[in-house]
Length: 213
Image 1 (spheres, helix red, strand yellow):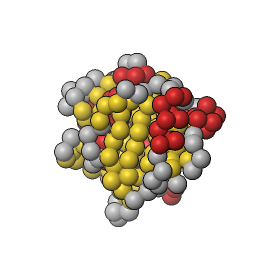
Image 2 (cartoon, rainbow, N blue to C red; image 1 turned 180 degrees about the horizontal axis):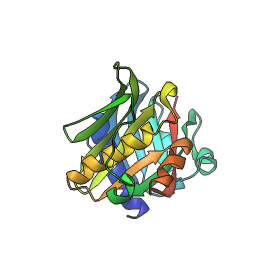
Image 3 (cartoon, rainbow, N blue to C red; image 1 turned 45 degrees about the vertical axis):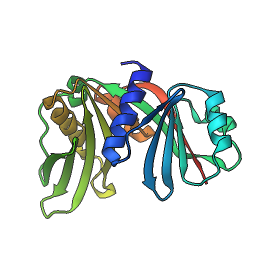
Image 4 (cartoon, rainbow, N blue to C red; image 1 turned 90 degrees about the vertical axis):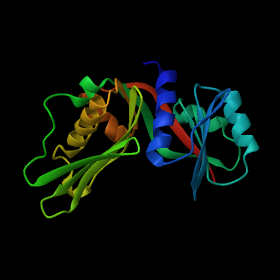
């Protein structure tokens, strides 16, 4: 999967996962209506396009508009017009086939935990709780044809370093593969990247966000 293909798969899956509008193609990438306070609209560049970044940020004066670009923070920041700032920390666009993303035997929760899964409207979810019902970890994946897009993976600080993030990732990959997905895509934080690389995911490009305040 090329970087451009992964970006296209990611923004379409992200929109499904977050319940946003369908991405609208533009010569430089896509625009998505998100419709949330502080995140009204999102532009995603398909490539390192300084001209497009400058045009978008210079023409946007309303707050809550986001821009994502497949470049490192130090490259994107000088392209931003006044009123814009980097947001969300450094990110990494990653991809893997389900066979690599599952990375081993079928997932099973560790002692003291229970795993529940369900799929609704094209989004598979995995939830890990303690035996008494307390939240431990979660994640979801939008399955859009041949690709699945992993989103919103998190582990409670009280339950970290117990393999729960790996359990969630493997579970989502298994669910996606069972529905015919042939490749996975996600955007990772630096901490998440370290885990995902041990599971067969590979970095395709940096992905940096900016927001109009």
